[in-house]
Image: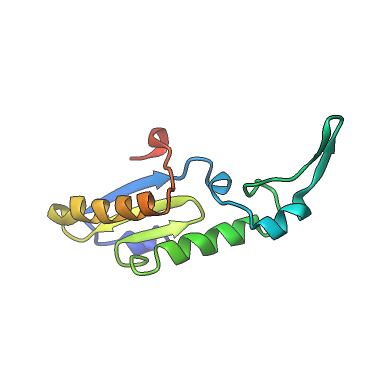
Length: 116
């Protein structure tokens, strides 16, 4: 679906979130449910760990909320992968600027090695 939605666009940029799940903070009241024990004590996660039940769905919902007005128009989002798409190549920098501003606003980081 993500690939099909880019048909007819002159410019595409692919971005990958840097440790996507680990950028989501746990709600303090839910942290107790991630408790684990070590020889030095009992600890809870402050950020969402990979492998937590429903972590993928929770992360996807968060990304959908953050990009709600840009989805399917300027950006496609699948978990921590983003595709910025532009009908006219001349407008691509403006679309990238919008997406980067949104990423900064929500303090999300991308992995530059995996971006193209």
